[in-house]
Image (cartoon, rainbow, N blue to C red; front, side):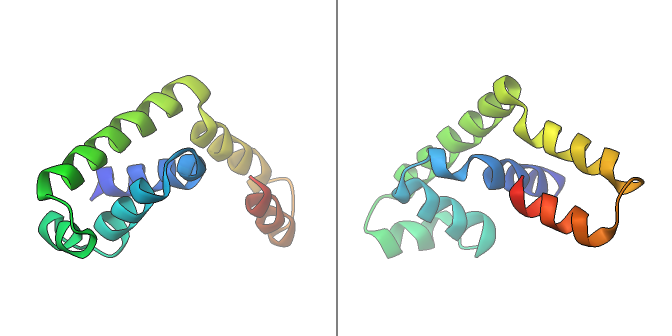
Length: 97
């Protein structure tokens, strides 16, 4: 479960860098909890094609975070702000980052 949460937080940061098809597969698998077979059937592709795309995405998400560290920076900003400003401002900042 921790891996799923981690990948979803990375996906929130880097979603726009993936194709529409990759986004559909990812969201069906990780958000809608569909099986590889169900996704393949829904999109008229092989189960292996879905698996390969998800694997590519997982590796790319990690690679992007290793290089850009957007998730890490976002968490550090939120942590620094926790003690300094009111909750309303924190929520506005979260909406921006």
